Image (cartoon, rainbow, N blue to C red; front, side, top):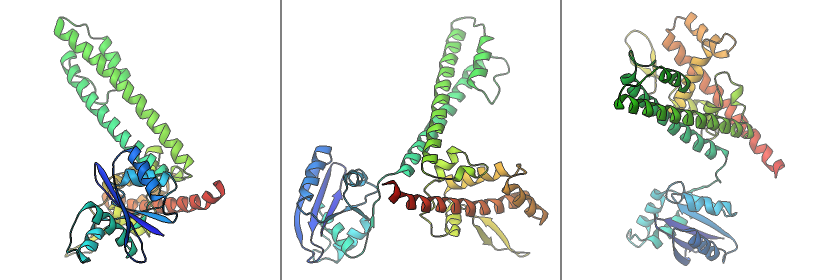
Length: 345
């Protein structure tokens, strides 16, 4: 087995082949960061039938190369830059640094137990891309609606209603009879903005449909939980396996209570350092379930109120319970998906 360490830069990648038994370099190659040079690197690496690629920062600068190699059946390991730096400091070179030394240090770091195997991008990555796209589309829609309100403010007495759809804006514009060039330009601008809103609404709807298809194809059962639609499910799917327990997941999302000093009684507050997107998702599920008599969150919320907690404290308790529930559903889905993989192939 030969370990091929790779030091990726923006414009070049340097690879060094290291024998893990003798820790001696068996060869080195520098390529440009291009598809043609990627093929040259892979052909060079295939001179060793038993090989493993060790890429420094495979989720950063080395992500493209790592995923390209994985797609072609190669085994790739990610080694953090801190591990390669530690190897350089402990070698006889006195911490000397260049691309070839960095590449060999990445392979040596893996010999000493650093690094983790990189997995191919899957539906989780696709859902993350769709979620990011949806955020950008939603922000663009908010900006466009704000621009439309600014134009309508000068066209209509009393301005336009705060919650304005494209159809409502079109109906309002039909009542405007422009007098002069300025009002005609304002009305034309308003029509353009309404057209942009319609396009954005269509893209948001298509985005939600694509999310739902991917969530269902992944085998996730999150949408069986009241308050979880395709958008929230897309944001949550694939996040459970990073955490060993439900408590670790709750701590990461900022829903685990933290004790605070009090002279009267034991008090708790929620962490303000949790992952805010996941925290927001759990908050949305909670406020959706609270007014639903048939939802389990409604019963939990009412029970906490009957125990003397304030509505805010009761909602915090519900979010903590929802964090446990969501983690259990996700980890169960992931385990079932892993069991299905051998049968599918």
